[in-house]
Length: 508
Ligand code: HEM
Image (cartoon, rainbow, N blue to C red; front, side, top):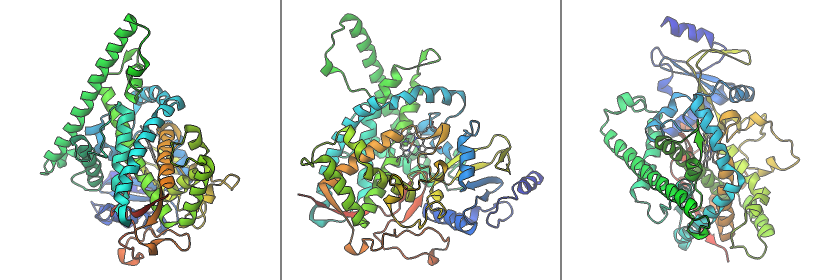
């Protein structure tokens, strides 16, 4: 109690909601991931865009919303340990690039960085094109007869197919077979992590194991492990066979060579003068699948949502496609053509400002810090509230207006730490270029094949503003949302609780 009082005095510089003895602010967080997001924005507005603190029992959380403090944390070479929220991913991901820290993380980060070289991305682009074509068929079916459908749900299988093919070199074909064990297990675990994140007893494994659903959870983790280890072992055998073939016969057949997957890059890498262990391979491949699938689904969904409501912006995206793709609008865009789609880039940036796929990232302090004159105690969670940055009207005037022109060349650009959807510094997103390529490839195809419409015509934005106003905490004070408007929820990734409901009409 004394220790706690001292800590409280130390952080008196940062305001926060009133708290109760023992539980702190835990009772105010809200029950659902939707409430939690509104709780955060409520405080963001109440404390005038300043950082705020939240006590969960005796555990101190600082929500960081001020760009100079975001810069302090992300530029630090010692503040790289993740907060405890990431622990829920350990059973699946182990100690991979996303969750790990220390010397192992440093070494792996250095080895894995070249796996995202643009030459490798060019290879991956083929997979993205092929998988997008298949996705168009699925969208054609779903949108028949002016049908209203949930895009968010469908796009998940698309991104899962892309990531499994590029990470492991296997086509799981989840778009055709959404009910296979592996696809179901990935879906289950992602939802499970999100659900546990804010449950006081389910969050810790110590107590979670007493819940009846724990058995299902273990089964899903086992499915993921068995499948991934099996792929890895087969790939190791293939590599050995290829090595032997090379020495026997150097003129190998180009066509029998499988396309290089992320796993192949890892298999030929060396760490401390030895190959990766099977466990290390497993951790990095699973991390790639987790970090690269839910995030891109979220981004693609929100781009589609915004284009369906903001038809003038959609028209400009389409014009750019016509200009770049010329007469053959249905063909695959080349790597260079994707890079030339500058307006689409602006739309993606503006989408991630409003709906960042990763709304918050957390660091754990292992010692005391002086953060721009504010004392931050040891054993504190520093949660960078990425999403709040995009709603700071000092840096983004009229923040609820969807306006890709904010990011036009020559416009007064924001400073580096005022907007960080892919984080920044040593632990930034290693897959940023991969993500941008995948998102642009699939959106470019969708827009050339379909006209995207809101679920019902009345939901098209008349004034350029989005329909989601964030906060206040009390639901009755928030504007009522139509059932077809997304009800945002903040979990590890940003999602819509009720899906992204749209219509699509095929273009001639
Ligand atoms: C729109 C898509 C994406 C967004 C917005 C995004 C965002 C982020 C953010 C904010 C972080 C920092 C996390 C933290 O500090 O805890 C991160 C880390 C990471 N991302 Fe992404 N990401 C996206 C797509 C991808 C893709 C496609 C991949 C892989 C193919 C990927 C792989 C990773 C990995 C491995 C890390 C951990 C890096 C490290 O700590 O060294 N991400 N991402």
